[in-house]
Amino acid sequence: MSINICRDNLDPFYRYKMPPILSKIEGRGNGIKTAIVNNADVAKALSRPPMYVTKFFGLELGAQTSVNESTDRYMVNGAHDAAKLQDLLDVFIQKFVLCKECKNPETDIVITRDQMLYRDCKACGKRSPIDIRHKLAGVILKNPPVTAGKKLTSSKKGSKKSKKDKDNNSNEEDDDAEQADDDNDELAKRIATEASQLPPSQQADDDDDDDDWAVDTSEEAVAARVKELEGQVGAFNIDGDDEAGSDNAYSQLGEWVLEQSSKPSNVEIFKKIKELGIENKHRTLQVLAQSLFDEKILTQIKDRAPLLKKLITSENHEKAFLGGTERFIGLEHPELIPAVPKILHQYYNHDLVSEEVVLKWGSRASKKYVDRDISKKVRKAAQPFLTWLEEAESEESDEDEE
Image (cartoon, rainbow, N blue to C red; front, top):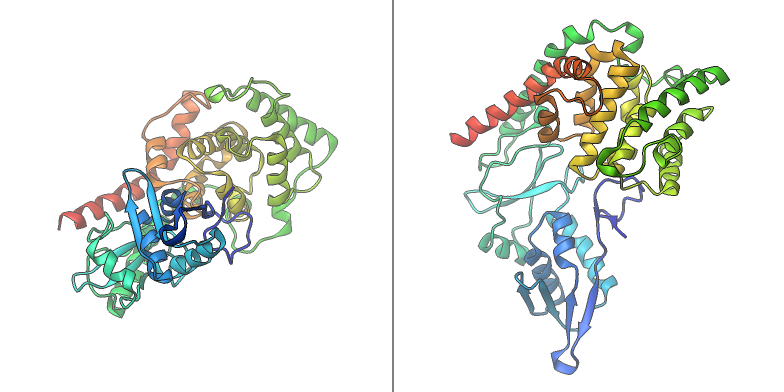
């Protein structure tokens, strides 16, 4: 079982999860202590050293603590139930994890030269100050995280900030905003030529229109799509998950999505996936990439992102999602090949694929999902986006050397 890192957020598709605190009271009398059984797992979910969490509990409770990372033992003197520790963990998350600007937990702690602490957000690029008056701040300064003092990269190259250790003043923020605009403009220019080849009806539109979700629901059209998907899904047998065939869980999922008279909601799809018992399988993402979208994919990714982020939890999930997209475009909608850079850009902006995975995917053609010739066409179309990622990475490496 896992819970949202920000427990105030009740969204079932919230991407950032952590295990709930598990505690065990040991000893009795003056020697009674509380062991935080899964402290390392909780700290890992928060991207913080386990010692920080334990020390924070001790400081807030006025109790001594002991930390032994080699034996995975984290103790707080006294008897403290899990619910109380969970409430204190919420305070730790607010003060030392969540970005103050966007409330995203995807942050790293940065120590500046003048010994100030900041939460550096990889989502929005902002730096949130940490209250240096809190006693844990002294612990962090004496025991800096491994990323402290290093330039940290943003998860979005288009919104990255300079990671040099300098004051977080307004001039720096203005420079960062200008850099973000320049990067996005450069990417837009690179893919403009490719995207212009698409008919106007297939280009992304900021205004959602019910017509974008329209699909031919006639008996003949549904039967044709189901038959097509059966052949595609049945042809896959990734890592021996299941026997290939139209009667397996993956084909059932694909057929169910296509057979609905109207587009099923994210919650409905997730319930169906849970019912089939394939919510953790990377092959599920391959099927969704082929069945969730139609020729209006550029206007549909944003609405499906919460569901997809919930299901994409590893590199294998990302690879399968890209593989399904490759089949969807290469076999079903070759007219979308010029739009591949825009599609990948949206995937990237919505955290559906990481920089490392998409660059590796684009490095060479593969016949795992489609014929090699089709694979080459899709990857060739992706080059403007891949080049932009590589150049952004190269720029950051140059900044590191300086």
